[in-house]
Image (cartoon, rainbow, N blue to C red; front, top):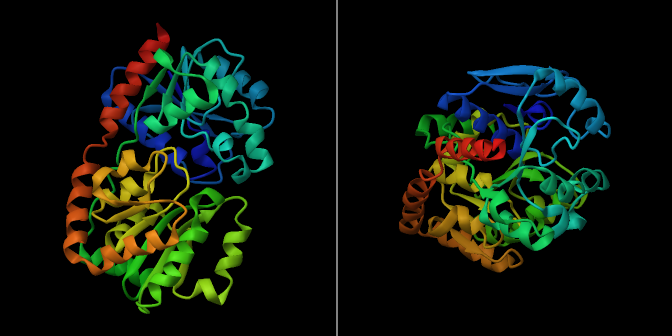
Length: 363
């Protein structure tokens, strides 16, 4: 069996983390040999996955010719099944196919995607009909598959992410080192993600501006990487009105995230749409209160362990953040509930469910 892990060599985002952590958990289960397709010319480090074979391939992910060139590279491997965690399988193949669908943003919010993204993700309708089995990472994504593409039933399985085992509450000395390294002198609100339209950062900046008016020592730390269609976001960040108290932290190593989560007063995550919402789970795993939008998959992930607000209401977002900042008893309760809830998201459980899907596809 093979797993297409090429994207991890190009974009260290949520899909890359999903792919590598799932591959590690599958390898730990034993009982099968997994071949990882790795990028031959990566832009990002590609950590090894113990227990899995790595095969470097030259075709980059999302390449215009990958439907023709990648099969030629995969065919000699003799795979009986290939899992494509980045939505799109190879349509011309001699093996069974399992794909993971993380979200259908290109259909729900087409204005938030680039033309290149539409070219790639526009193949999703064909992909979900071509694959023997489809994994959705949340019930919200499963429901979107049914509503927007008419795909459901026995071919779709909901398997949520697990919690990265590195995401746990860090001691004060680690938090202090992280605050010093990133210039976070006082209390801070944290956001983590990719700078792109559906993350709803203009609303967060509006809410934070009002929040900070009464708390001048408060900082908003935006931890992420440049994405797409982000010019309006950075135009706001360049303006004195919205930039006061805001720190943009690009290029933060993933190893530093647990300490940054642990030291934050709260995670603010007001996305308009998420297929899963990994930063919310990671924050809960580190004992950080979460204030998130009440839409798409986020209620599934956060449950009653955080505060949920409408994604178009800056006043509600500000009020929820103020409740956490001004209410130590509420913050402590959210920390405890978040830690308990995060423990329910296990990569071992996800791997066992994924292996069952592989077996179904083979039958």
